[in-house]
Image 1 (cartoon, rainbow, N blue to C red):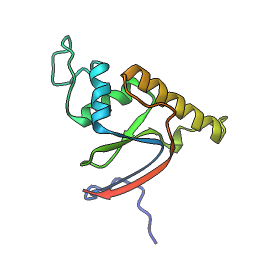
Image 2 (image 1 turned 135 degrees about the horizontal axis):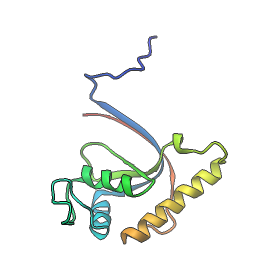
Image 3 (image 1 turned 120 degrees about the vertical axis):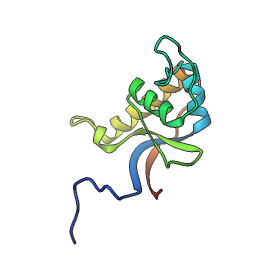
Length: 128
């Protein structure tokens, strides 16, 4: 079997592995409104909530340590950290506790309700 490690230009599949939880896109958009997301299509001095989920998640990734993944269509995004974010001196439990803490901090700052997040490993794959 041959394994291709380079970029595949004709591929329309995606996959991810994240330790975290699912959050619906409406919740992410609400957090963006509270955090006053700056749209790249808007003048830099003018802030307003944006409604493109890709811009919302891009902004949130810049603002937090968390990553957001999900299919191109759908009502949910997985929010958390991938395994490559485990630090060299960090145990599995420490990593999981760090993710839960990041989710709680994000929820508090974004004005959304994520109390005691129920985190687990999420792996997804799909074709566009």
